Length: 127
Image 1 (spheres, one colour):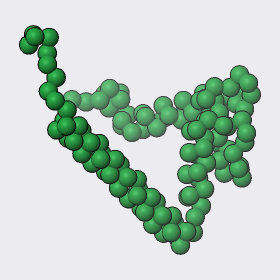
Image 2: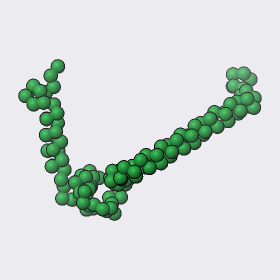
Image 3: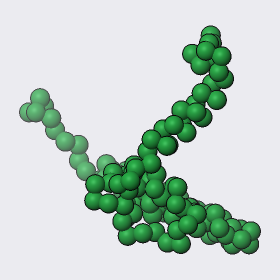
Image 4: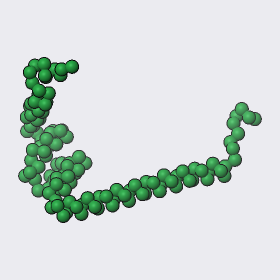
């Protein structure tokens, strides 16, 4: 089955890239970083200006911008810094997984002990 863009003679990828470029150009709003700016306006602004920004402007205080700027800073790491960062992140993920597993095991163990020590509950139908 042919895609609609292929029927018109365009490749699917070319049609989507063209659509994305037109969409991005349409989103270049002059109200970014103002009170009337939407999250999308500010996000497009941040993406366009990322190479010129040294730090996150106070107007971009949403959590998505914190993650965006953190990712941008990580991409500037030297190979040695990236290796250390990856090692630290692996250690942190391992620690969190161990903690989650311990919590889950403790919860299961507590439920099992609680079920053993409680007498069975009589239902309304039994009396």
